[in-house]
Amino acid sequence: MNRSETREKGYFGEFGGSFVPQSLQEVLDLLEESFLKYKDDDDFNLAYKACLKDFVGRENPLSYAKHLSEDFGGPKIYLKREDLNHTGAHKINNVIGQILLAERMGAHRIIAETGAGQHGVATATACAMFGMDCSIYMGEVDMKRQSLNVFRMELLGAKVIPVTSGQGRLKDAVDAALGDLVENYESTFYLLGSAVGPHPFPSMVKHFQAVSSEESKRQILDKEGQLPAAVFAVTGGGSNAIGAFAHYIDEPSVRLIGVEPEEAATMTEGTPAVIHGFKCLLLQDSEGNPLPTHSIAAGLDYPGIGPEHSQLKTSGRAEYYTVSKKEVLEAFQLLSRKEGIIPALESAHAVALAKNLAHEFTSDQAVIINISGRGDKDVEQVFDMLR
Ligand SMILES: *Cc1c(COP(=O)(O)O)cnc(C)c1O
Image (cartoon, rainbow, N blue to C red):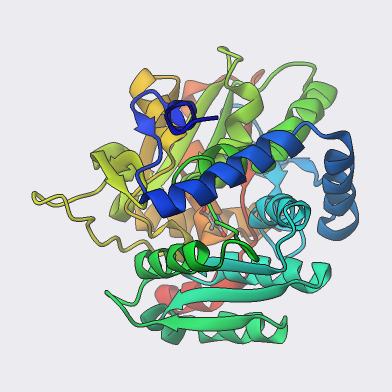
């Protein structure tokens, strides 16, 4: 396969692609070749499903939220419980898929980037289970702010490498990890954490996260005998949302609804640009530099968004809205009190928007809210904010 074919395949409308130096492109071409080979391989898929069942704890439930439905006064609300996965969020689905691919490709060493630490912890967890050497790149500033996650990764046997270049944040950690990959690609696999980056990462991450909607579609048909009227999911880089949408994209009766923070409103205010080797909607200043974001949910602090979301928005297939910090804090408490589920602050964004839009649905319709993670990591922060 030559380079131009590869690049065309990585496009979602005008978004996506691969804007990287030739040395990295060669590594990505190898990765694409392996992904295409194994994604439909029976043995590979058996191993993936077995690992999701025995290690991650899938399938996770689609829970009917009776009290929340009553409170919203609109449709029946169902919650897809990615919070019940091992390590407490959806990120592990993608990590397991990619680490199995790394094993098939003969890699002995895994590297990853992390911002808040969630993807780093999920990667370190899987590396411990697979007996792989693990190095996590993390901005020096982020390491100070998330010292407990640094300790978690170290407990799990990973090496956390401080990145001092640039602002010492997530963007610089991605650049450092890409540099490592180019130098060590024969032994090393770069396990990227969201549906972003150059081709084939967005398609690969979607493939492994799509297990969420594969399950929820079966579960909702079983419980309701009909498709959901809508699926709500929060978008940071876009991986939990694209996984929650995947099996409904070709079902025009299902509204696909993405939610973002007012403080990081990529889909609402972003314009097309290239970041980290791919084209997407981006929050940028007049000179084209990425703007800093300030979400209360650390997992949403990314100025870009996956290319497929950029295209789903432009084509009108999916809708994207913002919610305020205040609405998120209310939703965080509401789900805790009404349903006994403390959600991640990220996931509380989706709950907040479902409340705002509940009046657009009727009581004989059902909607799904993707609960991307559990809120234990956020309890102390919310305690401080509410005081
Ligand atoms: C990381 C994270 C997100 C945001 O990442 P996406 O790639 O947009 O899914 C959302 N929810 C939780 C719980 C997370 O840990």
